[in-house]
Every structure is written in structure tokens, then in C-alpha cells.
Image: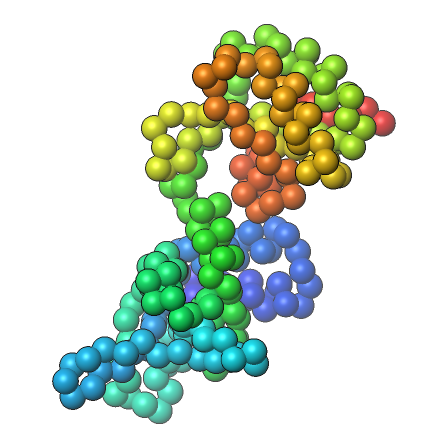
Length: 227
């Protein structure tokens, strides 16, 4: 697993590919890292940091003990997941992100990006219902085509029911493959929402996000523009 994460980082650096990036994020969440610390004579603990070219502090995370210690066999460290490292950054407030293997790989991830990765790719973050043929709304799917066809920039539309780990109930999610998502979403959401009961929660996302790409990977669109 450890070498796989580094391999994915190196492959992504050679040539950007969305599928490699997604694999990397998922592997990131599986990996246990080693975080170096310092303990003085009074047993006070200090979290070490590395500084990038912009003088920003990053939390160093190593994958192997030999990577972290080098010749310093007395160096202490904590074993930590990326979720716990992110929570630590939030509490400490003086770190901009993490640096994976800063002595060699030196792969930096900003705090905001870490939050987004954890939300989108945690295995238990979202439960999905992609089969909606038994849902009452399925009877109205053909009527949706009239709405979708109004928007010439829309190529595909996916419809799912999802529930995040922190939520009790499922809600609807429209994922839209289109240009100019921000320009159409107000009118699109207004017209589509009219087909649902008023108490239904409906979200709308562009396809061009890591989360949207992942949840629709094995889902057929309910609409695809005819060429």
C-alpha cells in the first residue's frame, strides 16, 4: 500500500490524469503516516513542521520509519491517519497543510483540499441509491427531458439519492455535465424542483468535481443530449 501511494503521486506528476488523482485520494485515506514530534526534558511535546518556498508551514508526514528517522534513531513520532492529521491542522491553526515525505517525494496538500478529499472520498461518507426505477419520481423522468432540452449547454444529467454519514435521511442529487453550470443552475433548479414534493431536499452539482465524478462512475444518466 505504501509504495502504491508514492507510485500514484509520481505518475500524477508525470502526466495529470483524473482517474489517477482519484485513486491517489482514496489511497491517501487508507494510509497510516508517521508524524515527527519533539519531546523536551519536561515532557512537553512539539509538533515539527517544514517550510515551503512561500514560507508556509506544512505538517510533515512520512510513510516509512526509515524515511522519517534517517540517521537520527532517537527521533519520536506519532502514527496518524490523514483524517486525524487534518483535524490536528485545524486545531493548531498555524499550518497550511501536509507535506508527504518532504525529504524525498515532497508532495504538499493544502488544508482546504484535505477537507474536500476527506468529505468526497471517505468510504463511509456517502451511501448511494442509483436505482430509482421504484421511486415515484421515475414516472416523471420523461417530462424532465423537456426541461433538459431547454439548456443547450447540458450534455448529461444524473439523478441519485444519497445520504452522508452525518445525515439520517436520503436526499436527491442531480449531477449535471455541462458548460457554464453557474449560469444555468438557478433556472434549472427552479424548474426541476417543481416536480418534487416541497419537503424534498434536492442538491445540484456539476460533474466536474471529484465527488460528482466518483458517485456517478457506475451510474447511467437519466438524460443524454442527442447529437
